[in-house]
Image 1 (cartoon, rainbow, N blue to C red):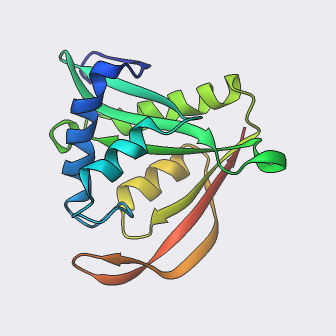
Image 2 (image 1 turned 90 degrees about the horizontal axis):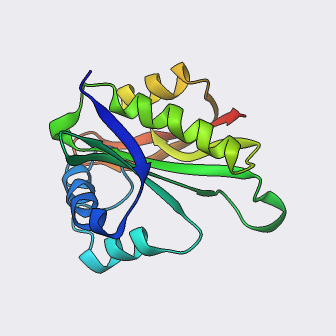
Length: 163
């Protein structure tokens, strides 16, 4: 594995993180954002309040990022929620797993009692396999919840891990 660091998101990370965002969603096979998502919608996603963001930097570049926030507000805010993206150029190096481990540690530091993923596309086998490896369980299935660009309607999973 290449040398890398995971650090808090800085304003200067916004453009490379947005580049990764648009690279990932253009496939229409793993994220609920439409491939034609408006740039302003993406910008709002990265600048919303109450979200901690981190980047994985490799070779002096942003190779991936993740966000951590409460899954719900108020009396349900003790459950965290995360989103992750790795640049296609940097896939296959274990960076998703490294960000997953980092997010679990960070969620514990933030006082979360668990992490829940509300929407993992069932056909995104690398993601499902990774989350299971890191201790997440499928606790629900949304039948035909995702309109996959190539496969049509496929299931989505709700995955959960206590901390």
